[in-house]
Each structure stands twice: as C-alpha cells, then as structure tokens.
Length: 417
Image (cartoon, helix red, strand yellow):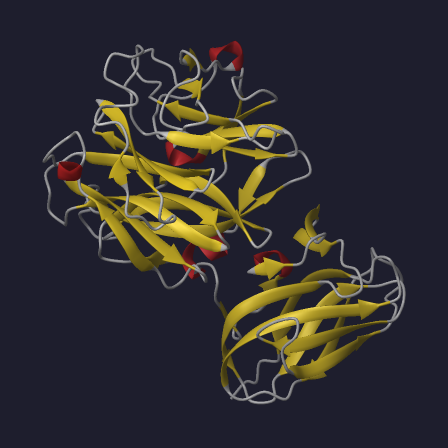
C-alpha cells in the first residue's frame, strides 16, 4: 500500500518525536520528468500511519543553496529540545537546518554553508543518515556517501550542537571487502547490533558502528525497493521505502515515486524478514475477510511483549496479566461477529476484546482453557457485541500465570452466501 499517493513523496525517513511519527522526505516534481527533478524537502506527521499532515516545506532558496532542482534525500534528529533537518543537494553536499518550534518546523538554515561540503572526502557527500546511539551520552553520528566506483560510505560523530563534526569522517569497512555498490545508507540498532542497509534492501551488521560490517543479504523482495529506512513505533518495527507511482504500468516512470510502509521482523539469528502479504495490504489497517490477522501485525503492543520465531513465522510472547495488543481499523466486521484466536496456555486465561484502547468498552470476552502447554496451540472463539463496520480492537489478556498465553493470530467467522 502506498502512503500519500500521487504527490511524489519519496526517500522516506521516519522519526518518532513526542509520540507522533514525522516523515522527512524529498519530493519528485511530477510524472514524465527525464531525470530526477526535486524542488524542495517536506515534513509530514501522523499518529496512525495512514493519515498524513504536511507540516512544513523547506525550499532550497531559503538555504545557502538558492534555487535548485536537485533536492535529494533528507533526515532529521532531536537534541536538547531542538530539531535538525539534514538535506542534500544532488550528490554535491549536505546542509543542515534547525527548528526551535518542534519537529514540524519551521526549519531555518543553521550554517549558511554545507555541513558536508563537496570534496570533504573521496565520496559524494549526500544521502545523510543521522543516527543517535543508545549509549549514556546518546552519541550522534552522520553517515553519508556511496560505494560505487571503488568508493566507501563515511561516518563521523557530531558535536553536541548537531551542526558541526566532532571528528574527521572515517570510511566504513566491510569484512572481506564484501558489501554492495549503492548509496542511500541507513543505520539502526537492535540488541547491541548495528544494521546498515541501502537501496534494494541489502543489509549488513556489525558490533561497532564504525564497522567492519558483514554482508547479510537482501530481506525485501518487492520488485522495486528505493531508499529504505526503519523506525520503531508503539513497540512495532517498520520498514518504509519508495516505489514508482505507476509501478506495474507498461512503461514505469522511475523519476516519480511514492512511499510504501510494511512491518519488519527479526528472526532468532538476527536476520530481517518481511511479509509479502503486507507489501500489498499496508500497515495500520486490517480486514475481517482475511483468513488470519497475524499477531505480529499489531499496531501497538504493551511493553514486554515480543515476537518469537516459530515454524509458521512468529508468535507473540511475553504476555502477562494486563498485557495488550492493539489492531486499529479492522474493516468489514459483521454485526455481532464471531472472533477466533489461535493461542497456547498452561492455565485458564481470558482475552478481553475492547473498543479502541485497553480501557475501552468491552465487546466480548474469550475464555481460554489450558491447551496442553505453551507449545500447544488451539483455537478459541467468542461472539462479540459490535456494530457492522470498522472497529479498532484492543485485546487485553488476563490470567494468573507469569506467561498468561502465547498468541499466534486471530480472525473471524466467514459466512458463505
């Protein structure tokens, strides 16, 4: 599913600030361009990942660049109550703008010159990613460049002011020299491991942000994966990337793009995987007609719940008394629907189906009898008291066991007419 369609929104970088998602993007001018024509950078916000509000447009003429048509990728970061927006001019240089009014801007040029000027290193100084580590100092880094023509990505620590370099940029190394030839870097971190990825969803991992990185392969096999980045929201992991707006047409227009968003999951060995079904269905909404709505597709989860790899994909674990999973916008629910769950439990438990939040109206309660252990899954069901249409469902789990139950998926009775 594409978000913000037919507006040329591309090169998506999402950050969560003050409990809301902010999307920092470049902006393809329109269809039919012979090359990339990009006149500005945009900032959108959303609290449901479906409906996006345009917050601010940074125009190159309001920066040191002046009028230009090559406003390439941008990224953002927060420090000491200020927000910073890093923007690249084609493959030439990267500047930085600052907002003291919040993540939605307005942003003003902070330096009046490039932060990463052309010729700083022996790679192109563009496509910036700003990564803030989870160490005590919350150390910020900027990563940029490309690895084509024998070049390398570069990384440098930023100063506390976020608008100057604390060290000379250092080349990022790959083990045995095995990496990829590409640009569009992105860095994220999980369980102490740094993940570096690029166009086409190729990725590598390292125990140190400077590397060396070990190539891991390709995790998203969509037909077109342009400038993909990760973010975490409500304890869920997302991957967002660009595709041509008219993908699937006889003549694809690579210079007019839109943005897709999908869930991302980590296997026990650290490999990243995604759901091909969600590539088309999108995130943040569901349909009662689906055969199953997988547990790992949640929009929000209480702290402590996590995805655990199993033979069928993933199951939800860490579910204690009062834990919840939230699935917003379940479309097409029949009146007084019969809901079904695939769960495993050692002791009796209950699933409260609530409207809209963990404290919403109770639509129904499913009683769960012991299934033979936490490795033995069985189906339970109950009838809801709901109106026909779209509902946001929150499942609140109750029980006396430390691990109340394990959760595989849910769905609805399908009536054949």
